[in-house]
Length: 250
Image (cartoon, rainbow, N blue to C red; front, side):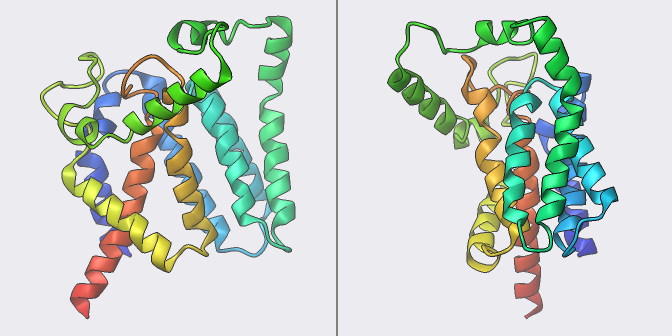
């Protein structure tokens, strides 16, 4: 486990997507750190039949911090909260519900501000989204699906990256080819060996929903709005590395 953890750490440290944002915007750089901490606590919680108040308070607070840290958190944090349904058991359901309650309490300042200043927090979204009043639901869904698929483009991941030079060095990709290969292998390992494990089902769910905020906007492969994606890809390298190490030992 230490070897796997060390290799994942090195992979994260060398991933352009991770270190580029640390030199650009403070709140975006903080968001992956909060995600990693949330996933770490959630992993430990998944091994417990009952969630203590400490676990509940920590998970709920981290969801709240992600909600406020960066704009994509307003969508991703509720998605991550929804993903906690994977951890429902007869003994654990109270902990999940209480985590939702703690998260809801952290949203009270947001609710009060929204009531006092209707539409203020969504004003910028009007300028960056492709969703317009004159569009039909079918047109919106088709554009959303196209954007979503483009955010999984191997070319963008490995060759070109974000086209905005302020976000990314144009002559290289945003991910290392080794990380992508290991992440794909990790998905296969999870589906074959760990598909009944709530933790890994949550990771696959997180990978699936993380591109949604960016897919709602006009920009193509926006490094900042897709910041949750590399975190889940790096996590998925762990089962692949473990599988390869065990296979070599055998």
